Length: 448
Image (cartoon, rainbow, N blue to C red; front, side, top):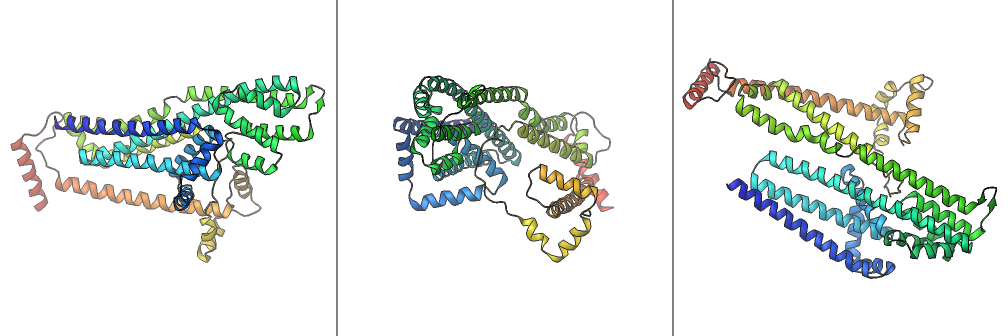
């Protein structure tokens, strides 16, 4: 009864915190949307003092160097850049602020679960569920925002093409089409209209860094060129109208690809993690009703099989998430990668070892690895790549040695500490007298 009470309290607290956070952001979003497009940006910037802004910018740079936090931060950044026309500093500040709130909420929930259950297994499940739900929800939300933005942009291009055929003026066509567009794409097209009417090339370069997708960047560049140098008549008609037709066609192909990919990968991340989620349940059930399975799970083969299942599930989950990524066309600011391989290669001992493991420059293997690195657009040289190989091999070797030592000491501990029954029982549990005799038998064996 107490467990259900704790569970109800924790669930109610989590729902209350989530509801308060949602209500806070909903009210704040409504306040921002009531003002003008440029007024909201200035109000956000004015409310943040200089010290807090520097803290946000430094935190953003630190987060981008951590793989897990970088993925979280870039997904939130993409969400904001798709629905708002912030400048670079503001969008970084908003992204890192929301990241701090999400991480803080997850930490509070995990602490409550740990204090209520006093179990590492419950905390592990909480971390796993929080990680999966967070990644999946952000991915689903970002993909929906992207699809909605692309669909709205396709409809905008249809209206803009109609207005351009009537007026033959790019700025007038974009202005009239933007007035009839939904709010999300209207923000982007109004900014493009302001860029091409101002004639300042620096504004166009600044928009390239914050544009939600490549279609808007190309459209802004083409519209700016036609506005400045005029349209050109080709054999198939107007060059600008042909470009718009190509944009619409490519956007529709992209939307169809996203729809098919989302349909085929729907639910696969959860299916990939089901073996991990059900392992402890199946294990506890088997040990309760079939005591003989306890020897298997606590033995060498049991640990090895569990590790293989966990590794396979994590690999499948990462593979499915990688296949479902749709943001390869979006620009995101990335900090320069720390080239620790370059520094390590300067060490005399490391250079001597690596030079003898790297294939010769005129061999087929050297050429093949170099071409693979170039095709992958990797900044690594072949010597740096072999440094990574050597370190991964050493870490794997050390991990296997530690695993073997752990399995050996665990088997010894089970033999020396586990009660020794007179005969194995496939079903049922030992009674009090039988358990006491089994423990005495184990102590006698240890003394011998």
